[in-house]
Length: 128
Length: 279
Figure: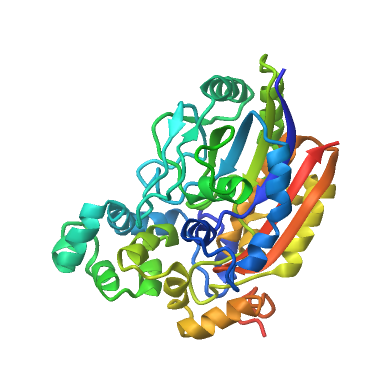
């Protein structure tokens, strides 16, 4: 019997469940490798060579090279692993997160200062 | 006999730690957030325990996807600050309490909660940011700390009900330790926040405040919250709040509320904070 996934009707949200974790295993372990300073330096020196050392799909590698974080998440990345990539780029965490929304970093920052994204209209896909 | 005298609840946002480390806590952005901890630092200085059992989650620092323990307890003598990608936080090493930690591990496992015993790992912002919020920047931490890890990164985390039951078991374990120790239990993480996808930046002030109210008065009610409700109402990372239920149950039913603080924003998050004493 298939697992129930009652969280799939939440808009703009990918839950890092068993299926996503399996899909993203090598992508996340690649991100994890960046916790070491020598690996960060080696990755930045030649990103393509470094990602080719990991058994990731081509789509995962291209998402990493493009810093397309939504595509990384769709391919099984988890935000706490992706954070290693933010830090490798010296991208502030809030700024990295903002790139996954439809807002620019400044607009996102102002939204947070204004109390954050409202829950109203954001509970269910298709909700008005 | 050891006893749990009080509980501290706090978010453990990394940017808060960075503000402390960089000395920017008094700028326009951070001053309102740190104001809520002025009383807390004073209270903590006057009520420093012998040991803190600090419930937190590792954020892909000590544990990656190779091994994912649902519950873990740090049983070693000392824990260094982890390098999370920008160098380790400049904080003192955390001194553990192996005697109590091993006592808890054996007691709680015999009571049907299968903790993973962890002896060699580093602690990340999840543990060190609450310490900095409550103690500031001392040369060494003024008490011992037992790291108590909960998986909230890989879905599913343990249920709120399971966490609450584990908290009760922790209390029994502490109370059966012979040495006369004053123990605090801290629950960390939360409150509402979502760090990924198009819905990132979600904050649910009303839900958070209802959670704080119930945590004080009727925590058992909070055990009914499903994982999907946490994610829907408090954001994909707001599910960390299950950890607060471990600490709340460990303190016991009757409590006095000493301090409460709620502030938005702290980076992408709502910052929540409570101090409760055993009544």
